[in-house]
Image (cartoon, rainbow, N blue to C red):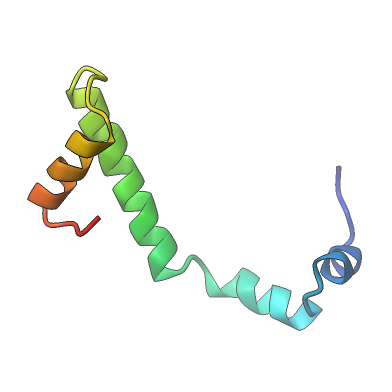
Length: 68
């Protein structure tokens, strides 16, 4: 289903210019970093034969230099 930009901006209470600025600005540094960490988490989990839980995954991420 598709909705007009003007209608969605009114519903979400954002300006059309703000929406178009966001659209052209690309992904934020935080979003990119979160994507990288998500990929690492999936990799660590798979490498552990899907046996590691959050405490062990956190430890692995900290070993790699991430502050979680």
